Image 1 (tube, one colour):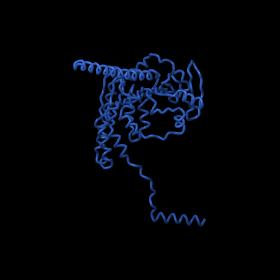
Image 2 (cartoon, helix red, strand yellow):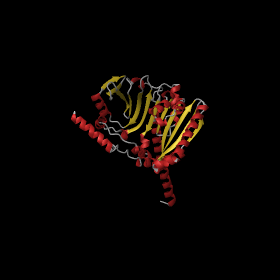
Image 3 (tube, one colour):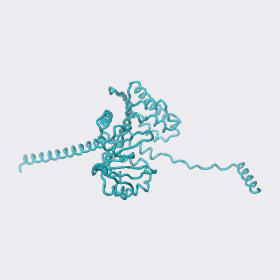
Image 4 (cartoon, rainbow, N blue to C red):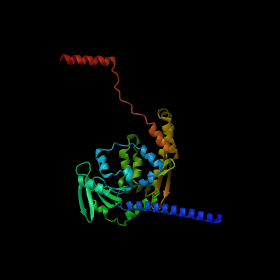
Length: 364
């Protein structure tokens, strides 16, 4: 074979390899996008909040694994451990994508979720049949199993081999009907599209009253009625996380109806960042806080950005900050241990009083 012909064949093989690789990438990307749309399109339009996570993508990100390992792990309860043994399902290994919606009710909220992954349908159905109720409705097998408190239950149905829907509502059937193309649904889709590049995100609607929820959970020293009022005026809030090289970028955005609210919220957030930086640089903090923790928080605060966006009908405030590997390492490695509570040693006078009381009790 001549050199020119050998060069030609080498080029053809390399080109074919590139085309095959590119085709595989497109198939993988299209598959992931289709799956994401599939689980999100099943979310009810009257939801107050929707949380989505693409665990397949997160598992490929080194920082995501580091962040997960940093989160404190609670001990697996006996019931869940038995579920793992009987069904051979572990969400850390087998769950690929999940979307969870929260529907606000008069008394309490309900959730509806759609999950994709690797399920052993026979084992899961056998486990549910032993501990719950199995019924056939409209050609679907619906399983209901008790959950914690008496009267509470989880109902689920297999939508396909690798997809399952579940809810803690009284009836799962309404959630299985096709979602109508309403204004509400189009509003949800618009927000989902904005965060399409993030493997984990949450979208929250105004009826969830995020400001009131924050105020009720914040410690006394961190409560801000003004911030709670501004947050309650937001029509939508989106939170998205995207792994980067050695960090997780967090983007939070709030939409409101008027520019005055967006300006006030932007000014308040910038003011909070300035106060936090000043507090960390203060002499008292320098003396009382581990320098490594102080530097880690300062790095995060200095890198944070707050900006305003004009989206036409709505005005938005966006906050961006990075949670770095260094931050996780420093904070987790330098958290001081809680000191043991030791009773103070009694004074001589106290010992005398105790002795007299004892003698008096003995005399009686």
